[in-house]
Image (cartoon, rainbow, N blue to C red; front, side):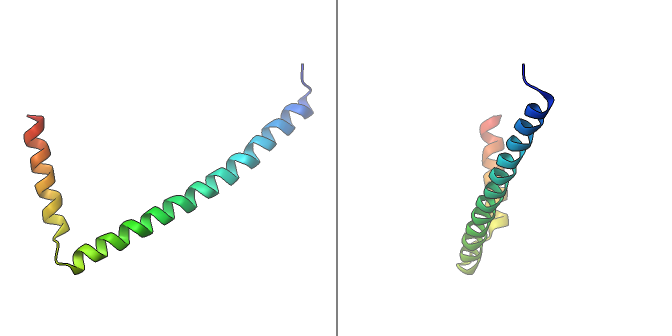
Length: 66
């Protein structure tokens, strides 16, 4: 059996590791979002109507799901 202090230490250690992992995950999500934004901006500058493209894709998907 483990003592209460050992259990507390184990949980604190786990939280420390998980918080660090969470911070790294947030950094990764931010990088991905920056890349998405850059591609969206480039497509808009090239004259692509992303809203129209999105609606077209939704209609095509709805048709396939019928």
